[in-house]
Image (tube, rainbow, N blue to C red; front, side, top):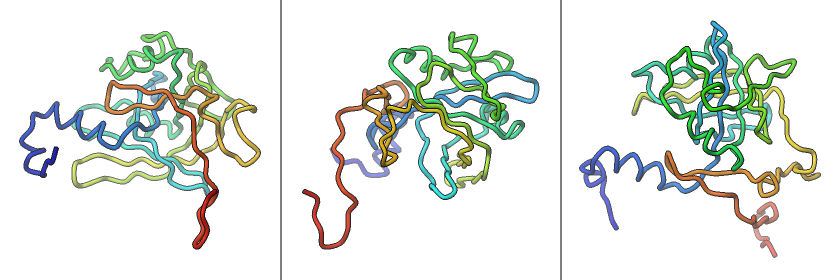
Length: 207
């Protein structure tokens, strides 16, 4: 198949959405937990989280255009704290259900049966069922003019991860964690057995 830009734009909107969402391949999927200024807890599934830097520790994600109320976005602006919680097969259906368009006064925790959990520092809710929980504060916001989306950058303030899933090198073992990935808006994949190579340097080859 060969599609030009004109070919892509000529396809139905749903086809374009699913094609472009799945084309890059499976990627990490997280539940983002927030809390609004009125105290409403919010939870939503995102597959756009990326590593931004390690010094300082920064992670970012894409927020869709503000053409309708975006509860996650408005809660982060109000509270500044938010959480990233990795998705796991044990609560896949509940995690996926958080993508439904609930009313702003409805907590996705209550609607899906997931459990909010707070730490001493973080004022946004974690997902108790998640094996990896990350607390962040809003660092920067960048508007993407091409399509009206927003790139939010958060500074990592705390991390909760099982001791036996982090190697001495710092590598996180997502196979042991049973982490899920996704491609598109509705298709989830298990993490497969990894191939780990040494740090690449000029004029050397990995064994």
